[in-house]
Image (tube, rainbow, N blue to C red; front, side, top):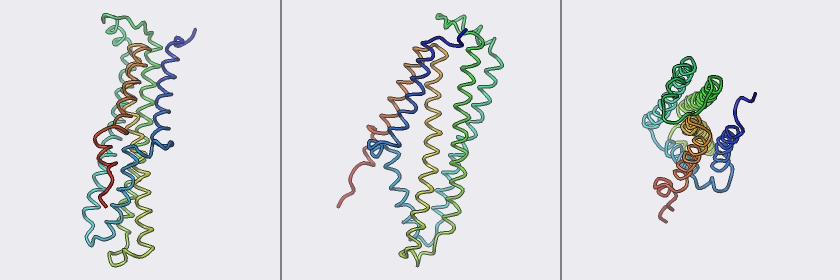
Length: 230
């Protein structure tokens, strides 16, 4: 006996394909160079070059600390979400009984319910690893900011190379952070599967459209894409 119906597998394939397709668009295609995430990369390099010209760098340390706190918050939230998913799995019988009282019958068996919950937990585990690694990279950025050459050497090739190195490390941390947030957003789409395969397809399409709109067509994207005055 198959665990899921053919339509369930098709819906799950659509979910995984949408996630992969979105990642390819924003990270590997020419269109990705216009996304909000990519437009922010150049400001990371500008930030590090400006940092070299500051005698006192407490502001830069404060910014790095806020980035660390954001990563730590989402990493902690991921663990809470994993714990919540495992708790839901333990209460499968009660929740399935509750579903039978709804106006529509999903026809979900206990094994299917637990398999879906396990998939949700896997998504949050993936998100935790991404946020935790981003937090670690921001720690490294803090060290590099502390190791920056003094202001009187800001024009030297060594100082300029250090700024580029810091910017690249911040970019890597931001990429992992973005991937963790992407997992959170697609987890919302995954919730539709608990209502059935068609709900999963619909919720996945909605999440995909909203995220792509924010990256390419939002007000914030247009603000960053504007050319600087000559």
